[in-house]
Image (tube, rainbow over the protein chains, first blue to last red):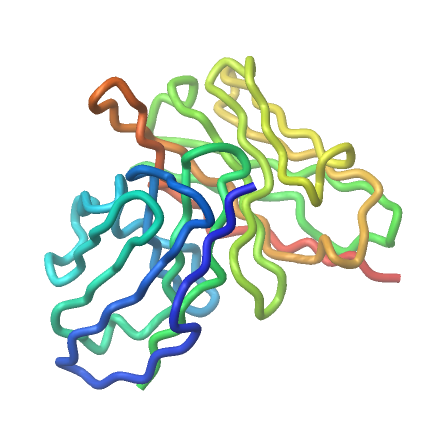
Length: 106
Length: 125
């Protein structure tokens, strides 16, 4: 099984900060990666798919990059609505595992 | 409006069974792979199972293999998860999710673009 490791687990930031979250795969997954945002008590929301494609309706301050084993999610200027937990997920092969999550807090 | 609505969660004793349902609306259900994802209290997301649009291919996570069965009824636009031999560690919010795909350079790039609000399963005596 492919393991997904996110770093950091928790990130303290302020409004306006540039934030970068890293997701590493235990083996190459090409660009088969998605990023989700989850707020407490809510379902996850798709942000990025195919490693760098922005889902429709998602603000352009969110961007994804990477291929192979290392990927990043960047928020160019953190907004109050962005404080949440972020997850990566691979789709290279089954099981489609998630990273452990990165909590972005004030 | 594209929507998924889970139901069937509740309190069940260890060793018991439960059947979750997910009703889809606003899109052509029969065209999409569908998934179950769960989240234990205070924990991260865990992929549970995937079923193809025609039910021809099915996959499970190791933690539920042999105990859970995913199925679908395209005529009713519904997804199901039959959960048997439940354990305390199965306690979680269970989400159904649509797996969309983008075809590019001879590959299908999957992602989960629509999620239900979830249904809570508690396994306890």
